[in-house]
Image (tube, rainbow, N blue to C red; front, side):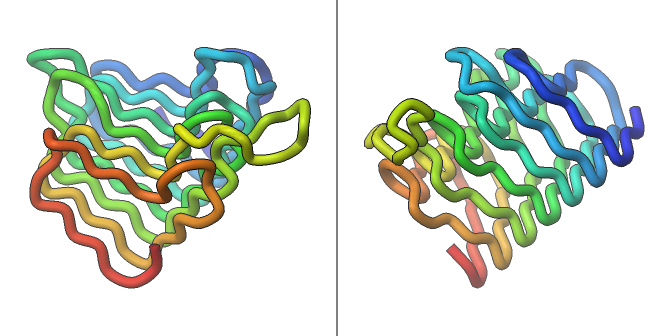
Length: 167
């Protein structure tokens, strides 16, 4: 798959990558309508995904890497990806499978925990980035600010995380 200059709007999962190699998503705008259970980008099984210059806003979760047991979300590279104004997490790294070799350069997670009714950040359980799983994750020059709960939370299933600049 190679998507370029795409706008996707609605109450669902905007982009789902499940079981393929070499995916590219570039210069795109993904906007939900705050529906519970909605996701901007879900990756469940891949051997290489490149996401660049993409805005993911107004979902429950902006970007979710969530491999099932025995599956891998391997070698994903995100550059200048914005996960903003979602009702829960901007990015989440979860699932029973493996998440090796993820890199995020100049990513932005802000205002997650947003309540569309009050137009305020009210969800104290929201995270800019929740990393519950992963090995060899790298974050460079990323911004994680003004989220409802923690900006960055790392769980016990994550190892070998490098953060340089930003945050």
